[in-house]
Image (cartoon, rainbow, N blue to C red; front, side, top):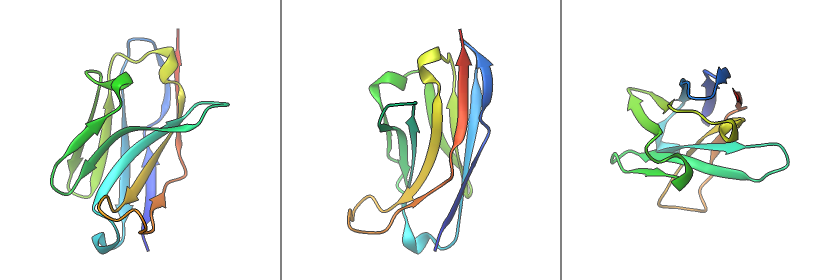
Length: 117
């Protein structure tokens, strides 16, 4: 099993920055990729950024040029710059296998990001 824990959310003014952290503990046998998702009130959960064990990165169009996902040992970070009020959401980290959609994935409990205008 894999335990996923996010941290780093908070309240920030528009234009500011935050760095979220995601630590997935447990064997990497069960996953090879980490993704950040976000869910605003009344909206679906959307992918924000992904990174896999080969270093391949993907970003949602809405965050390209502002957010960066990177890894430092067992922790994956989401650096969020030039934040906008529409970035306000609960941010979730997901550990999964990107080459096998039937494999179990693991989610964290989420961390709130609020951007004030």
